[in-house]
Image 1 (cartoon, one colour):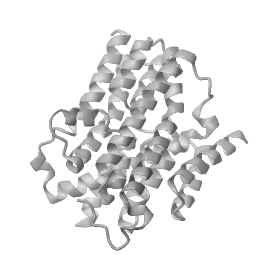
Image 2: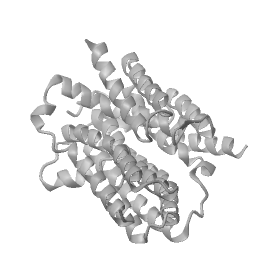
Image 3: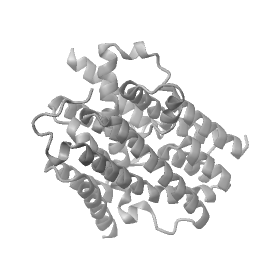
Image 4: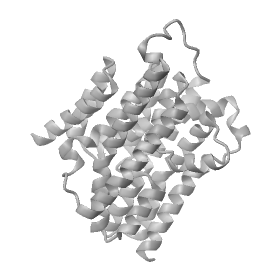
Length: 100
Length: 235
């Protein structure tokens, strides 16, 4: 396989996967169970994404400066700090711990 | 359905102009937070011998940071085309799952559905879902999508042209900008014990599988298993 072909398949495939969610027939989305699944999915997928992007590098579990940033974000969210404060403080903490 | 404003409709937080300002600021912040990744993606891609056209094609069409990084990292490390493309697509599956939710929430028709699908990613979905109770899901979705799309593509090109001049996202702490933003956006959905347990369970399941399944799979496994558990618990 050529490199450009791999790039093309990844790009086309990724776009097709995105479209897949939009071609599900509307009646399948009407049921009570479907509604509950669809409402919970973004929450669970994003939770898993947060966990993996903070505590993993490739196939390895790691505990590094990102965990400190996450802890600060959780505390600030708990005390209802504004959105930007949460993001900036988390980044500043992670950068500080990384520099140690 | 938009929630009817109660007697607090005159307070700053629920007025339409305050909502517009809030959404614009958050969307811009999220867009800015992806730029270091765009820069390093561009730089890593060039090192993996991709041409500028190929790099731009990925950011314009694949438009999914995790998939793009996986593709060029595996290619750059000498991995096979099959594992590189396979991992990228595995990471792209969750966009399809987001799509089903966004489709049910915003009900786009005709050509809008194609445009909407193309920009359905972690960031736009998180913003739309977080603004759903305020009735501003569509505005939140499109504003975030535009912000991230433009800034991601611009930073990708710059990264490919000048290399990684800013240093790695870890040095600037920007590697936690995404997780921190997602937590802030999800917080209002995590007020019940039931949802908190589900979210924690999803993260825990994902982490347990990290060492044993291919890169890209843990997020799907965690997210889907947690939803299944939630349905069982609700019975």
